[in-house]
Structures are given as structure tokens and as C-alpha cells.
Image (cartoon, rainbow, N blue to C red; front, side, top):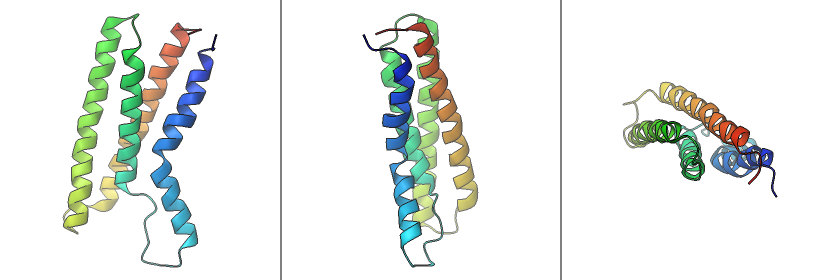
Length: 137
């Protein structure tokens, strides 16, 4: 039997770190490239991709959960709402790259980072709840 306490650790390693690959890549590029035009390590699209990975992992884990149907429906609804926000943020990020100076990039980055942070806390709480209720697979 696999202890469910490993699920949160696996989630952090496999889901969160994979979702942060674009950010890690930019940090490596930023540290190794001698180009002053490369000014921003953090791109809103990186956090949109992290958020999408988190949402997919939440939906996948919730689909396996069968104890509390009301909580399950509510959690999927919150996750879909987050996906809608990420769709809007993706569109704004794309628009800001195609039409410079139409959207405040700094504000967009802060908002995207804030929503990704909220999503991370939410995803952690979902996995924690499931972990508490199912001690063993």
C-alpha cells in the first residue's frame, strides 16, 4: 500500500515543478545571456501555464474523489472559474505582445502572479483535504 502522505510530495514535485519549467528556463537564460534587452524574468504567460497545470491536476484528483459530492462539485466549479481567469489573462498577455503599450505589463504580471499564488494555495488545500480523508490507496 502507498501512503497518501506521499501524494502531496509527488504533487509538489511532478505538478508544481513541471509547471514552473518556463520560469526556471527564463531564470537560466537571464543568468547566462549577455543581453541587456532581456529585462524580464517573469512573464505572465509562464504563470498562466503554471495555473493551467495546477487546474488540470486539481480536476484529475477531484475526479477520483467520491466521498463528498457537494464539495466535489464546488471544487470543480472553482477550478473552472480559475480556468476562465487564465483564459482572460492569456488573451491579455498575447495582446500585450502583439500590440505593445496597450496593456500595462507590470500590472498584468502582478495580477497573474497573484492568481497563480491563490491557485497554488487552493490546489494545496484540495490535495491536503483528500490526503487527510484517504490515508491509504
